[in-house]
Length: 186
Image 1 (cartoon, rainbow, N blue to C red):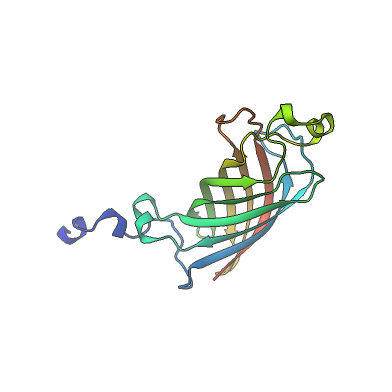
Image 2: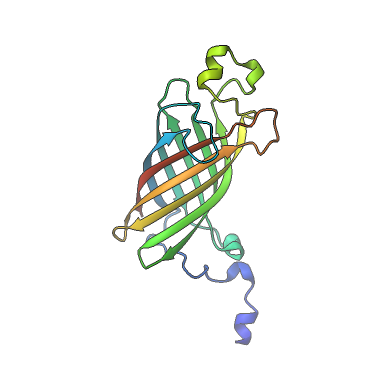
């Protein structure tokens, strides 16, 4: 008991409900998904199309244990709609299992997008009808998913994410996606 009290928080085991890793490499899981572009609770549904999403989750470094050992992630969302905004993103995601094979994830980070122009006053009339002025080139990103572990290595999940600038720039329409994905754990 005394020895446990001397263990610093960053050296403690991951929180209860966190998933154990299978492999030892830095990349722990990759996911491929499709999403409805600009569809979600915080969006005005101005942009159209289907998105393709690819992301990688990495082993949580030891210094993140004190905040629940989140997985760092990198990803890209490629929009297929005419003039729709694509973006690359990064951040931290926390995963908690429940009912044995189910899990919930939540995370945050940042994103850099290719949408243009950034402000409504810079847009043409045609652009105002189908492109979002997101205000800043670099945005905040929040993500949530509900998943099911089909096998030890394969998972399926529903996800949503939101990118916006949190009113730090002149325009802040925000962009939501909602979709499904399949994951492979290494």
